[in-house]
Length: 516
Figure 1 (cartoon, rainbow, N blue to C red):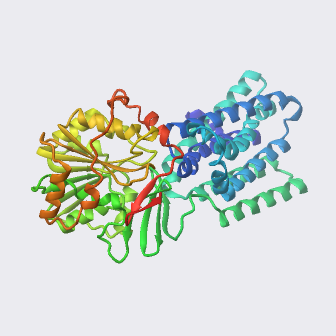
Figure 2: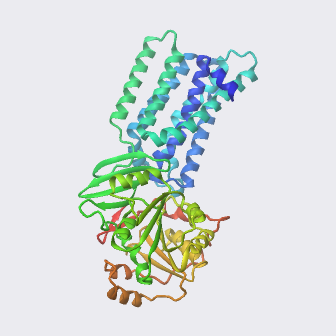
Figure 3: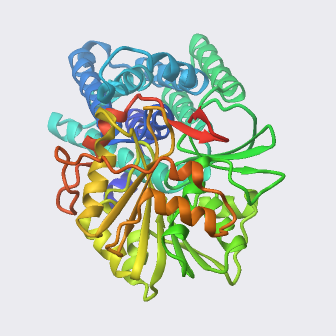
């Protein structure tokens, strides 16, 4: 690797083109996940589509470039290929969102839906970049064909490594998708200029200027990202997802990966906006002595803030994304105190390492299309149970359909929890059949609390909320015969989520179903 790096300091023009092509193609592959995920999710099907399309486009480019290299390999053609790729990156920045929305209505099975936009948005530039390696091998100063090919492909692979690591560890955590695209486009233009030197023809110079203007204009007028109504207060790429904070009609909403995650009334910051967060209080009707609460997943910290303010409890919150924590403190009025402690960690790792025990654990780390499987399994439920006291309660906020094909994940999670806990309760949050938040409550107490008993306790106890509406969703008819128990060695979460792809997800706000 060191030898390759030293050699790269005195690259020929063709070799430089190969290095930049490798860096850009792999960088775009990593970036593709961030561009596609807000519309199509970041499931295994999305990433499989991205990897497959990039490999297919590169392979086809290598093949066609190799067939044509003997007659067409010139520095002028390499310059043109680099400039075409840069122009397409400008198109990607400017019209990416429009293409995503248009392709989302193409009638293909849900698991293949992301193939269409990935192919349209990334296939052409990656295909063109694939020509550069065989062209460079043809133009190589190496006398031996094998030596030339090996050297060129080693440079291309080295460039891909640089693109992968730089995009993953530095660019995405620091810059927006648009600026990263602009950086790759600029890199391609600079490489084109270097390849065209020492004498740049007038036509090539005009093309370079035109593509440069396109790239700058694309960033200035970009439509990339999910269009949201309201004023964007903050927008960034975190190590885990795209994050936006949007103000609209007096409500501040946190978007993670393009989906609404949390909301706060700017005039009443410690009140519920999304109805599903009201269900967090149901465990207070199942036992009276709740003093220690753990939230796994923070988001906008709606539940933790309200618990810490309204009840005499100690609240610990574990959130894996450090940018989400910082955003909650800066934009959602979250303050650590003696009652509210925040930990930046993975939820399962935190449970494994802590010596604390809790009365209530609230699991709020699932998204519609992105579910950390290690927080769904029987082994995780056993770990959670071991950190609960003898009458402890586990609450899981599951996103799924209440019945039909889209309900498989919810029913599998119900079945898995029932393997560990004596009683499991189910509370959908919407009367629609759409994908929605479904609250699962598992208790270590083997005595089942009936719907009527919950209603009576709701009338007698003062917990600061009237939960009669939430109790009305109490369900007992959860069928689990056709779904698996999720285990560490086999948790087909992506397969269970598959039927939900492309289906509307609603969040109830003020008892009105709203698309998320």
